[in-house]
Image 1: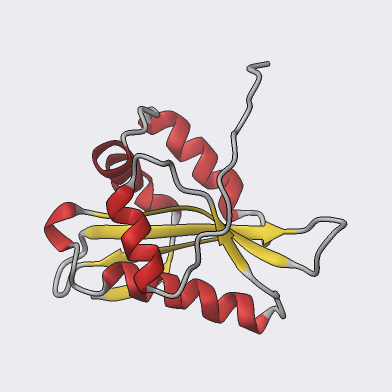
Image 2: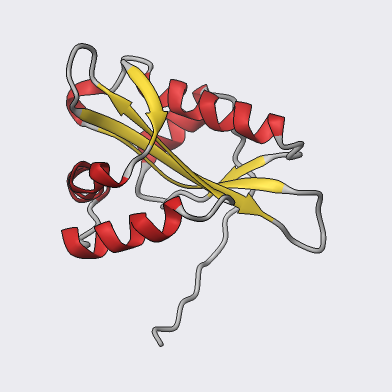
Amino acid sequence: MRLRPARQEDAAALQRLNADVLGYDYSLSDTQEQLHRLLAMPQHLIVVAEAEGKQELVGYVHAQDYEVLYSSPMKDILGIAVHPDYQHQGIGSSLLAWIEQWASSQDACMIRLVSSEARIKAHAFYEANGYLREKRQLNFKKMI
């Protein structure tokens, strides 16, 4: 497995991972457009995992700066996915380690992430990688 920063040509593979692993129905054209925007923003980092000996993407992690008035700078993991055929091989842990190194290099005090209550296997994975459950909360949204 090889980790590297995402590139624009990764859009189709990222869209498939989002659909197949995370259940997000977001079109390829929208994914291409959004990836283009995100890659231009230095506060975002998207790292992909390629299968050994292939140029097939099998996972990714997306994180960004998280700045608030009540804390020192942090990083926020917005998404992480590993194809089911490649889970339990250390890929997800390696992706988290890359983000942790990035956070450390930028003097972030913490990395946070939010995970749906339904993603029980993901919770065990996060805890196995040293992430602690902090609280339960409700998320509210308003479409505009």
